[in-house]
Length: 497
Ligand code: ZN
Image (cartoon, rainbow, N blue to C red; front, side, top):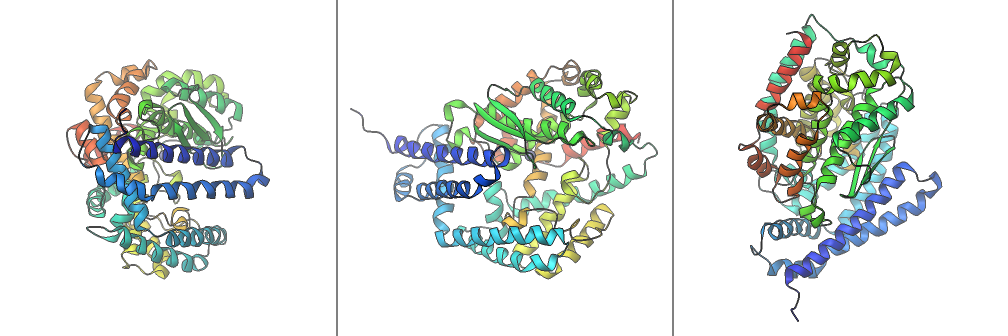
């Protein structure tokens, strides 16, 4: 009988960790969708047990011993699984359990303080919590280690391999041309009519159309569900079980339609991962940035395009009767309206990255100790004016709007903008590979596009890091040009520039 190899043993442990994490995500999903309120105390205990089990396994000495025996052997799948397991093991063992516990306690309090501070628009009440979290996260960064600056260690948690310097260079190039283009669009003579978006559309009609769109682009309802939650999300447990949520606002239908397309984009990625590698890094998405590239591609590049609505608009009108007098052009212009706004989650495709650049610049300075916590509101407002031309009237609509910092999630924000840039880069390659893409969209034929994504992105799992994947798939490293060309072309047409 053959003894199992070190890799087989390690793979068994990796799969167990993946299974435990998938249990965690089903429990999370249930908490956000169907769990009755009184289920909360027991759910908190269940989740904390699973989190403890996952941490125990990740840091088990057996994993360390096995990793020490494995270096550079085997095929690409083995190489990727070992590389990612090593990364997880090193991060988990370098941060002592008591520091993890302290962060979890401090962030629970910070989150509660943030909720109060936001509702009373009082940054001062949140400031000491933010300061404490920053201190703890600096400690995490120092323990994990970094080559350039502390922020790198935090960014690496969400976008493995990315560095602050790279992101800063990319964002610096984007900053001015994007800001200027927003001003150009604001000054254009032709302006979309935003009132179309707030016409009343019954929930049932929105639900039917959004489910129909998700199905049309390829979301498989035998391997997934769409339910309702306050904040839409996608939770992928396995390619055969992907849970999406959306929300229905009767006086603002884009929330459901584009929220569903966005989450379905995430869902298509999860459903497209290789089932042979389930519960291992090779069966896992590359990074948050690459994940976001998939959601933004289906939501914006496809779902807000004219060809897409040339196909669906006649059907949509049968359900959305209050839009009967709205022409296709007026509809497409309205769903693509660009205007500097205060709230990131409501921002359009063009201004969105500016919201992210602001947050990245600020959190990098906060972690680096260059920006004192007490100066956050003033710095936020000044940067906002510089980038978007407006000043937030209060902290609620300014520096207190996002939950991320209250959870200690520094380094998360850049992945949203990277997602847009990756999407544009991939989409430029897709247009070359599928020259008649627009005709296919006009016919409601999405299979060719989805197959391209399956082959070139989804199937690889974590075979490549994000930067490498971009290079392999598009033949060149990430740059801002495809994104700037995409927005200039699309929005100049809509605004008649
Ligand atoms: Zn997303």
